[in-house]
Length: 274
Image (cartoon, rainbow, N blue to C red; front, side, top):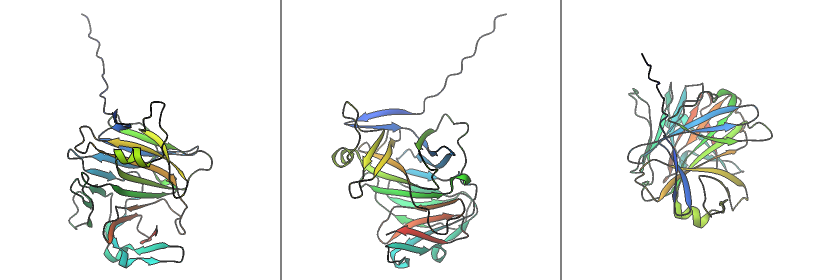
């Protein structure tokens, strides 16, 4: 009797596509990671819907009790340095597990949590097929409280930012919805020898002169062929009072409001740069 040898074939979930002078990753799911000499951790997760909607989830902080809220400019108290302080309790909802942030293709944004009966905050923003701008920013403090990168799932694209020198204690993840034409026209980026930008590159922020590394990605068969999601991970200053592993999330500013959450919620005050 002869035995048939079984061959395991790995499914390909990621690719790189080129449009004009922009190259970007193609994937349904991405995990945003940070790597230093002391830590290799997962910060957040990006997924795309069939209609191009963007989902951001936060399963990697061990603390699961948080406060989600919608804040407005009227609630802000600004100090002499231009920093705004918000009391999230005024319009907030305490949750006992992870929430997910959604920016629908229509422009509606909201938090969601399976099985929760209490409505969570919502906020209108720009339609993904028509506009561009900041989709979200996530501040993470004390990386020791986040899950380490161990076995990698084949379905996920791992986007890793390496930090040399001192171990980072405070990072900011930003997701921008960019037009490809705007990337070529406005960003002073590192192009390769053929003149292409991405899917990993560096840009210079003209007002400050700071250099930012970024990733470009989009879903398979994206309905928004002229746009890509740009992701950056940068060091930031550790805010006063942040002495435990913490996540602070801010959705896109729109009108006079934006969505915010903080995990854990023992301190229900959020500070943001004005």
